[in-house]
Image (cartoon, rainbow, N blue to C red; front, top):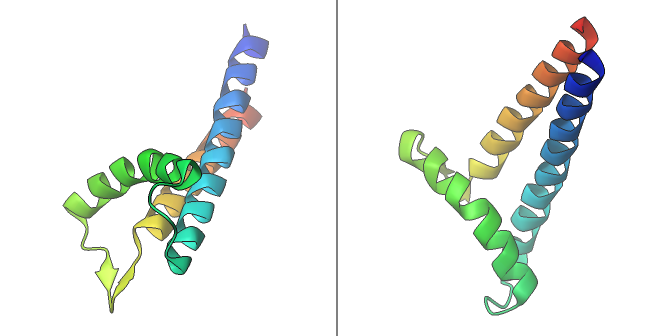
Length: 91
């Protein structure tokens, strides 16, 4: 039973790691004025913007014209990864 739980937690950890890279790439792409009709840009926007909207609802994220919603999201995801790793170690 522990092996299954550890496998599930490691898979969740992997998905969080991939999503962190998606957030980083999406944030970097916004600096170059991408074509909004590009399928990759649309995918990145569709995957990250709903979470950004949720964060912006509770925290003002624009500071000096710079949006810190990706940074807040990455910090939360990193915290979740640390939490999952600690749970795995205790099992």
